[in-house]
Image 1: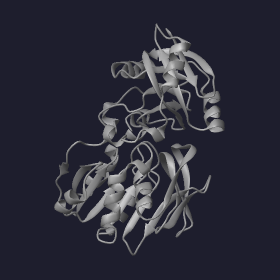
Image 2: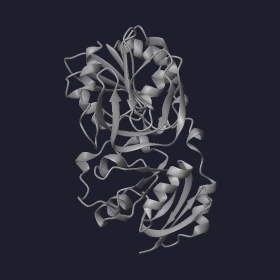
Image 3: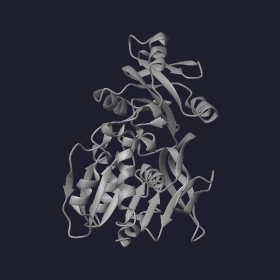
Image 4: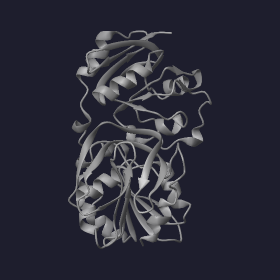
Amino acid sequence: MADAFLALETGAVVKARSRSPGLARGELVFTTSYAGYEESLTDPSYEEQILTFAYPLIGNYGVNLNRLESSRIHPRAIIARQLTDSISKWLSTESIPAIDTLDTRELVMAIRDHGAMRCGISSGKDATPESAIEELENCPSMDDHSDIGSLVSVKKPVTHPGTGPHICLIDCGVKKSIIDSFIKRNVRLTILPYDTTIAIVREADPDLLFISNGPGNPEHFTDAISLVNEFSGELPIAGICLGQQIIALALGGTTEKMRFGHRGVNQPVLDLPTNKVVMTTQNHGYTVSDPGELIISQLNVNDDTIEGLVNSDLSILTRQYHPEAHPGPHDTLNFFDEVLSLI
């Protein structure tokens, strides 16, 4: 096996083993998920990031292409303690650099101590520490990706027929499981690009506006923010993950970048109205810091970050985590029924 090198913003350069060759740069993050690696790798919310798996063995049950959450792998590179041959082959086929045989426990601790950070990877027979450092030096921060939505959104409207209510879903990087959750409820679903105009939504005449998950800083999704501004009080509005942050910004709230984010399964969330805890799947690096006109309905048990928002007068309902949970627990699948009840 060829060598690989990982250059960190801390100044450290870590030697590893190459499992898929290439150069990569991005924001270094980690996930605690121990299963569902196909779903994680194809989650659009990992765009422009380099994903470290905290669980030591990745690929032990092969690669099932029926589990993909989008049409391609989104992280710029993959890091694990050990990658199996089957997943390494898949990553190589998709031209995604991958490295293993390094201490991912130490790497995860570095991310926890210093926060999600820029990094560079050089992997393969021509890999050198210098080329990894060069990738790091040319790596922009996540806040610099001002048009990241264009990398993950549909380019033109996509429709799914149904006899139920009509939902316009603004695609900021939507996961397939969210689409499937609506289709299973027989809604008429229109998926629109992240930069859709107010006029297009008015012409579509939906019963509800839904803002999807996605990557990057929510403040850059100005068109989606404008849509929420325009239609709040006129249409029911719901959102997941980035969607919650966009809706909060539109209604006078604020967001902030987290130190290392929430990425993984079994995150405990307290539902304030019922005083019950549900287990959730999460993938986000930004959070709502001030809810504005919205009311906090759910909090993260570990760090008290905002996990759910509501405004009954405006018919708005949001979640920071992923109720569709692929991978992860299905404690909160009823969220989609609650969304439909807004109509």
